[in-house]
Length: 419
Ligand SMILES: Cc1cc2nc3c(=O)[nH]c(=O)nc-3n(C[C@H](O)[C@H](O)[C@H](O)COP(=O)(O)OP(=O)(O)OC[C@H]3O[C@@H](n4cnc5c(N)ncnc54)[C@H](O)[C@@H]3O)c2cc1C
Image 1 (cartoon, rainbow, N blue to C red):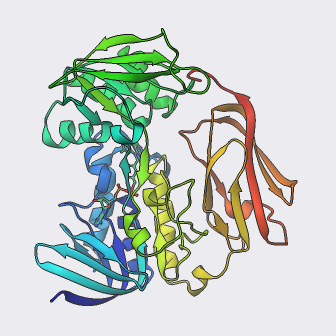
Image 2: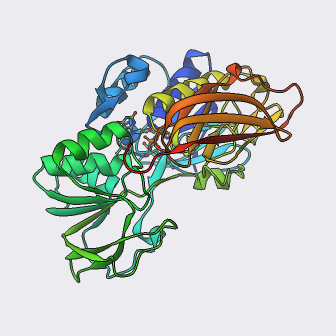
C-alpha cells in the first residue's frame, strides 16, 4: 500500500527552481510543503558546476554552483519544508495526485498545488542523427562535466567539441585544465551560441580554436572514437562537399542544446508550448491546468540561475494567490527574430518578468510589440545574443486596453562571427 499524504504544495525537483519555490511557498504560509528530489542531494545541476559565475545578479558576488546551492539548502534547513531525497516522481495525474518512489516505499501525495521544477536534459547524438560508426568516446558535455567534477574521471585525452553553447565552452576549459587537448569547438551557426564571457575565459584565454559555420559530418573509429570528419556548412547549414577535414581525436563532446524535462507534465495533461518545450504559463508561472505551476528550466532553458531563482520565488508566492489561474487577457507570440517568449500568456500586465531570446545575434537591436498589426511599444537593446535572455518588467510595457494577440519581434544589424 502506498503512503498517502495530503499536502498544500508538492514541489517536484530539488534544483535551484524547486528550492526557491518551496522556500517561498513556506515563507508565504503554505503548510505542509514537500520538496521531492530524485538525487542524493538538493541543488540539481549546480552540484556539478564548480566554475564561478553564479549569483552575480542576485547576490552581487561570483559564486560556484555548489556555493550558490548551499545558500538555499541552508535556508531550507531552517524551515519545516519536508525534503525527501532519493525520491523519484513517477507519475502525476491531472487531479494532482503525485506518485513517487524512494527507499521507504511508494508515496501518493494529494496536493492542492503542484510545482513542476524538473529541469532539462541534454540533446544526444541520436537526436542530431550524426552519421558514422558507433564507438565509445561520445559524451554529452554535461555528462562529461559530471564525470570530471563529481566522479573524478577524465572522459578522454584528445577532444573535439560540437556546439559552442555554454556547457561546451566551460568543458573545453575544464578538460584543458585536467590535461586533455581540446582540438577545437565546432559550431554550425555563423555566430557564437554561448555567452561572450565564456568564449573569452574558456576558449580565447586557452588558445582553443572556434570554427564557426562548421559541423561534424562523420564519426570514425571501431571500439573507440579515432577521428571526426568536420565540414564547412553553407548559409542553410548544409555541409559543403569537398570541405571535409579529418580531426584525429578519441572523444567527441556534444553541446547541442537542452530540452525541458516534461514527461510528467504531459501525463498531467498540461498544455506545452512548441517553442520552449515547456508548459504554457502566465505571469504567475501558472500552467493552463488548475493547480499546476512550473518554474526554472522545465519551462524553457534559462541562461542564468539568478533568473531561475527570481521566477521560482514568484511561484512560491503565487501558490497562495487564488486568481493565479484566471483567464489570460494577452497571448504573446514570437515574431520575426524571436526564438522564445516566457510567459506566453498575461492576465493583466501588472506584475512579473517577461523573458525573450533572439534567434540571431544583433547590434543596435530593437524589440517591438504589436497588436492587431500596429506597433504600440518599442525599446532599444544595444547588443543582443541568442545565449543571453532579454529580461523586461511586465508592468513597464504599455499593454493595450483591449485583450488579444501580441506579437513580439526583434530586429537589428546582424552580427556574424564572435561579437
Ligand atoms: C554546465 C552548466 C553550466 C552552467 N553555468 C552557469 C553559470 O555560469 N551561471 C549561471 O547563472 N547559470 C549557469 N548554468 C545554468 C543553471 O545551472 C540552471 O539555470 C539551473 O540549474 C536550472 O535550475 P532548475 O532547478 O530548473 O533545474 P536543475 O538544476 O536541472 O534541477 C532539476 C532537478 O529536478 C530533479 N528531477 C527531475 N526529474 C525528477 C523526478 N521525476 N523526480 C524527482 N526529481 C526530479 C533533478 O534530479 C534535478 O535535481 C549552467 C548550467 C549548466 C548545465
